[in-house]
Length: 198
Image (cartoon, rainbow, N blue to C red):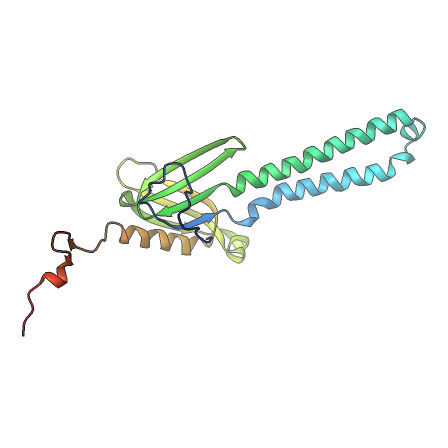
């Protein structure tokens, strides 16, 4: 969960009266595959670049050597771009819990995003699961939000501290709609309006 910036609009359909309670993102484990692949490719390209003069075909032709150098440079640039885009897409996947809704922001690609909203009153139950030693040690897992009626359940994968998040979602659900009873005309609360006994 991350720190909330006051008066900041986190999604397009957020109402002015809608206060953000907390935000969750995917666990950092989701970044490992792309970083691993990118590192392997970068190391291979650098090693090949430093050793390419040992290949007879490349070493005997400055034209071929220049062509290979340009190709490796472009390939490494695209590898870095791939890692960066993958990081951006994963980072922009987030779940937002407000005083009114549960919002799931799915960043499908660099220029494609899907926002799904679920009213807190439609939440029936929230369950969290962790499978295997890795998820237990690194404290991440999946969360399933069960909805009322025929609405589709919300599933959040590889969320950090899933049990804490599921508990906070249910706490927000229980607090939904609980407002202090007031009497605007009299300018006092129900407690103040009650007759006093001596």
